[in-house]
Image (tube, rainbow, N blue to C red):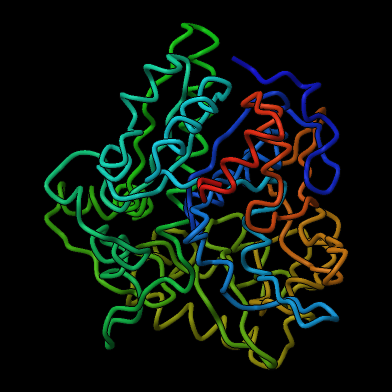
Length: 418
């Protein structure tokens, strides 16, 4: 049941209404990051996304720093804006009977609903998957949670760190002589987001084929576990429990962080081809034929690597800057400067890929945020839309998708339902 494109076409926040998912309606009942990022990616792809918040308890990410400030002193979270761009804003009290009925009415016109409550919460409210599926059998119901909809942990509260801890990643991150360290970003939230988008798109494709929607169940713990590379098979095959390795790879060498004159670089010239090229580029071509380190297998040996290979790399890198090293490596071998976020934002490759976009908020000024990594040739993503204020588009959404008139909308507002 795709949305009548004429109903809200051209009225998307920021004036955006094109894209590969144009006509797909998404009800976004999420907060913070994992859910909002999922629906934001769908919105960037052209879906009509309606962010539904509790009028008494809106998304608390609205209070997260950094803040944009207006001339009158009003503030708007840049964090919230980045993960909620291109969305309509609607408030709905799902504890109120009128709120439940209104959600059901919206579901009849929707294609996707995304929520990231603890399992059972929507059922307790009386608007769980089974109830909403009865309203619209084509509905794709995407549920993102800490531990998934099944299993003994399903009702446990969880954050990103919960997933990093119970998915194995935390135990593997850091340095061997120190306590494990969390990954320096919310990888549990972000990985669950990406799997939720994949699952949602797959389910939408199946709706086209069968006419039936389904539950998309994504767990942060599951998502993190899938990012642990060879850890599971190392344990199941060899009985090894991987621990922190610092910046080293479990077996590939050289493939890590190396100091240089003004910081650090990543160098990954471990194959025979790249090693030979590197030896030539850094003025020691004879090393490519050194019988002790002339093959990848020999360089992978930990003792040989520490004794023979690492000193060579130190010699190549220590007196050169990041820029000089990148210029030497050029397009020939994998060598990359380790850049802070300021350097990344100003990086010419990032600019060429439109990965930092400028969005103008009329009351607050310009906000620079990350763009979309999804590049479609025919229907490009549109990452420059605005994020809504609380309930900003209630009248527009309810007229277009719920067929409510101004009197009924005013009644609902008076009751505190919206």
